[in-house]
Length: 137
Image (cartoon, rainbow, N blue to C red):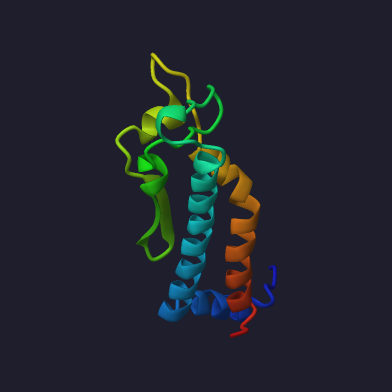
């Protein structure tokens, strides 16, 4: 028979993580991580963009170049459940730009933003979770 040590302490750590105040704090960290992705995507769309008659469309594979600011102005990070965040753009052509169509190659902006922010966002959330696993307030 194998004796398990530390089970009681581990169970206590897991119970602490289900505390509504801690869930809210972790949710806030997730929302901040989502906002980091949101800002990164917005910056990739607006950097170097020129509106109006001097607007130059982006090249396939590059982030779209903002003209009307509908795309970047509609990107938002929203906490959709206590521990779930979604970063989306509600612009009518957001998906077509991100993934392309049969007539246009993709101009991804969200997936590259996620990749660029993945490490920093994970670190932020991990720090909050670890603080509570270790019992620090």
